[in-house]
Amino acid sequence: MDQNSETLEAIFHKALSAPKLFNNHEALRSDYVPDHLPFRSDQITSVAQVLSPLLHSSRPSNLLIYGKTGTGKTAATKHVIFKLAQTSKANGVKASFVYSNVRMAGTEYRVLADLANQTGLSIPFTGLAVSEVLSRVQSQIKTKKLHVVFVLDEIDFLVKSFGDRLLYDLTTSADTITPGFLSMVGISNDLQFKEELGARVLSRLSEEEIVFPPYSAQELTTILQERAKFAFNPAAYTEAAVNLCAALSGLEHGDARRAVDLLRIAGEVAEREGSMQLDERHVQIALQKIDQDRISDALKSLPLHAKLVLIAAVKNNLENKSSGSIYENYSSLCKRSGIESLTTRRVSGLVTELDTLGLVSATLVNYGRYGRTKKVTPQISQDVLRQAFHEDGSVTQLLQD
DNA sequence: CGTCCACAGGAATGACGGGCGG
DNA sequence: CCGCCCGTCATTCCTGTGGACG
Image (tube, rainbow, N blue to C red; front, side):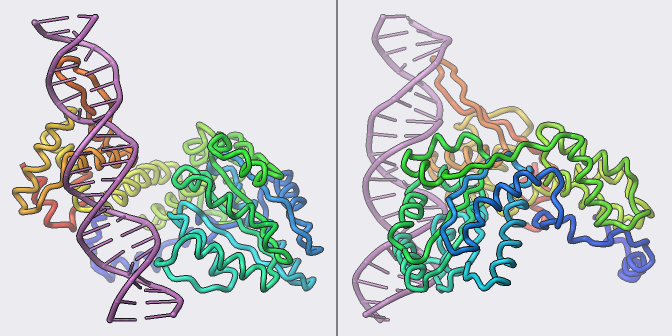
């Protein structure tokens, strides 16, 4: 943080002379797929069984995978896909495996674009109708006789934001694209999302289902220890620190990803400090850091007016405010910086967006005769806000007074 | 018991930058 | 280059609403 005071030489020297904690930094990245996934062998064999018909060129059933975040769904699936790709290549079976994370992709269009690009079509970032892309993909699969397994990670997000139309089209295209085929693997964090699915889509998509249970605290600890052994040099960490990571992040429902993230950040903290050994103190620091980074990333990427609304909500103390007072506050901020203000309607929308981001909390309140408002309480302090907007001079100014 | 406040939040519509195929 | 379609952001117009006040 305050490396400004250090000279570059000092930093470099420190880096050179510091003990090397990490042995294999990669192993703690969130998208890393370990060779061995403890406590998931049942699930892995199930997935493999469902997909294995591919090896004799028949179409595997569609598959739905459930489980809360950090239960190894993605890792296990990727693991199977990877092995399957190897095996099919070795045996001369033509098959393509496409992985797409719906949340990362963001829109239906980009999900389809992923599929299209991986099947050898080139598709622009934007500009085509969704249905156009779909039919291109279908004809590509058909004419090239492709055998495609399409993994849709966080598929619940797709359904929630865009409905099940795309899934319907994808699942029903099975008949029309012979002699090629398309098998779908849906991965969902949300156990309830089936209910939002139309009956026809559901029955087609969930020809097979596999549930990933959460890790127990004990399992989480084992996983983390194993990972640590692989990622760090033997003397570079204490067992207690690793256990603390497991405990801190796994309390509610055995989320392995958070635990691994925490361990990695803690390692980085320790390394930067030039410590000989990663201990519990580093884990505590890392925990704080993760929270703060998450918030300040969210803040920086906010559009201008959202920032202004947020400032209006946070400014002059913590007292919770009505939509009306926020709007007044906001529009005076706009006037002062010569920006045209948006409508109340839009600002109301922005407030709900900030709410879903967890930056403010908005609850509906009735004052009877005196109307009805969203009562808005900021969830972050002025200081955090100021720090996050630090580079953004134009906005920082408004935070004064 | 109805009124009426101060908004919530849905629907329709439009402006805009980007990208297509022809 | 044109006409068309996309997603995003915003505006306009609108109907809905819980409960204190009279």
